[in-house]
Length: 172
Image (cartoon, rainbow, N blue to C red; front, side, top):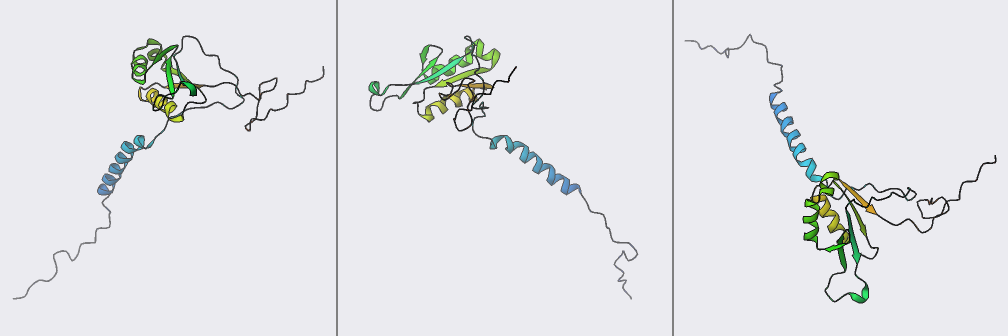
C-alpha cells in the first residue's frame, strides 16, 4: 500500500520562459493613456513674436483686423468698460466678434487674424480676444505693434532697447 510521492512531474525541467503578453498589454494601455492626455496638457496661446529688430511687415487692407482700444480716463464710468472692441472700423461686442469671425470669408479662407491693442488696455481684455481667436480654430494670429521709439537710421535696436550703432560705410 504504498503511495507515490513523485508529484507527477519529477523528470520535467522548470519553465524558464517569461510570458511577455501581460507586459505588452500594460505598455499599450499606458501608451494610449499618454496619447489621450498629452494634448490636454498644453495651455496658453502659441504666438511667434518677432525679434525687436525685425523689419516692419505691411498689413494688407483686406486682412481681418481686430482692435482693442482703451476708453480714455475722462470717458470711463464707475463699473463701466475700460476698452472698446473693433472689427476693422466697426465697434462690436465680444459675441458679435465671434459671429463675424466665423462668418467672414476672409477669415475662413486665410485662417488669419491680426490683433492690435492700445498700450493702456488691461492685459485680461486682450487675452479674452486672443482666447476667442484660438477657440475658433484660427491658425495664424498676428500681433500688431508700433516700432520701437529708440531706433537709428537702419531701424535696428538690440534686446535692451538700446540703439545699435549704424554700420560704417565701406570705402570705395
